Length: 304
Image 1 (spheres, rainbow, N blue to C red):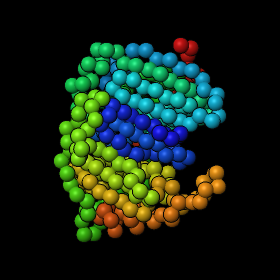
Image 2: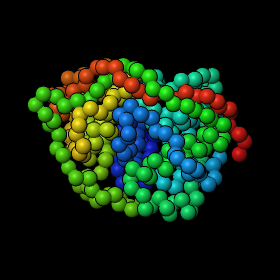
Image 3: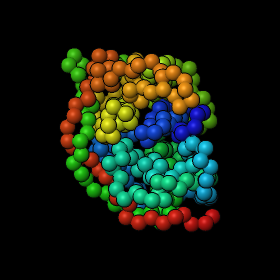
Image 4: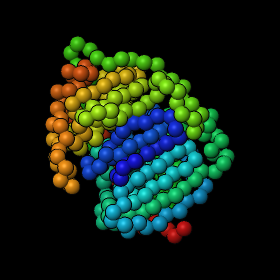
């Protein structure tokens, strides 16, 4: 596992995602994000009493060499070298910097290590939830932790912003529709050939996906450099899960030389050209209502 990455894990599936323009993060998850009520909607707090971690510790991290690292499961949450900015983006499913208002000062510069664990009762209850609801519970517990320890208060509003609509290109989709396989029990590896939600690099400038929904595709595309900090919204009308291989593209476009002097990777093609040619999908610029989150109040974290 490299620096500057994020992992959600309980041994079933892997998908790749990017939370900032500076680094690529890895999400290994036994649960995949379920569909949301609106394509450009953030993840809202729970109705009623929100779930919370049973125990949690927060410590400052002043090591400039440390990279951002998250690890989530249905039992534990770990964050290493995370800013409040990073935590808010994870907890509320923020896909564009334009979706957060009011971050400044220490909220983007101070880094923290967090270790948290759910109660035994909650862990047992999570096993009976669908894969969408399991990830929901983890996000809600993180929201509760931010409210309790950072005194975070937020509000939501709609704002018309430039977006890209993901639509079906002329000629129709060129992806293989599959049935999603059942998720194995926590800690149990998925059987060979299982169709579980995942996307990741499988070669130079190549990504391979399994059981990938178009809602997930829109989220993933939102973090390509070429997208220019816009949210991608799913307007394909496709409801299934798909296997595909996308060749010749990179989330970092155009490619640049490595800081240690290594040669740049092979030149990547534009995602705008690759999607219609290879997958039968197209990105269409437009303006649309996008939900934004405002930081109404926050304080530096309380002591353990």
